Image 1 (cartoon, rainbow, N blue to C red):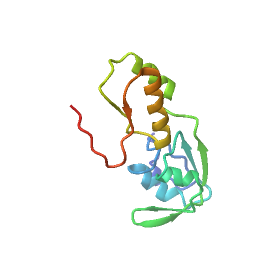
Image 2: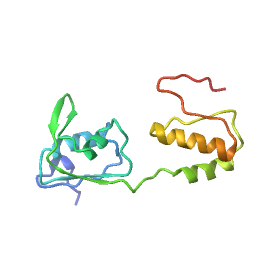
Image 3: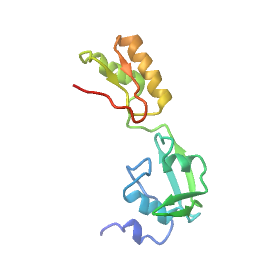
Length: 142
């Protein structure tokens, strides 16, 4: 027997999605449908970056804009930030240690303060030049 599609569910639902930031994809259709119903729950697993719908949910948003309309958030929202598929700073440093030193290392993913801390650690522990480019800054990569 095939599992019912989320759009066919008539009762409370649990949606498991890899779209952790809720910025696009099928998860938006699911959220659009389940957020208004207080019988439902949304569990944000892992890091939710600032400026994303997932972060807005974690921060207690009462409504989210999706598909040009505001959707009320009545579903329970749970935050489980301790699960992540991302390496921590120590794991990144260990991985970089085995690589040849590049001319410059650009840190372009993550929260600005965390990227700046990692930049300083790369400089201190590996002696490499590491840079956190400003938003919109262009760099020449050869």
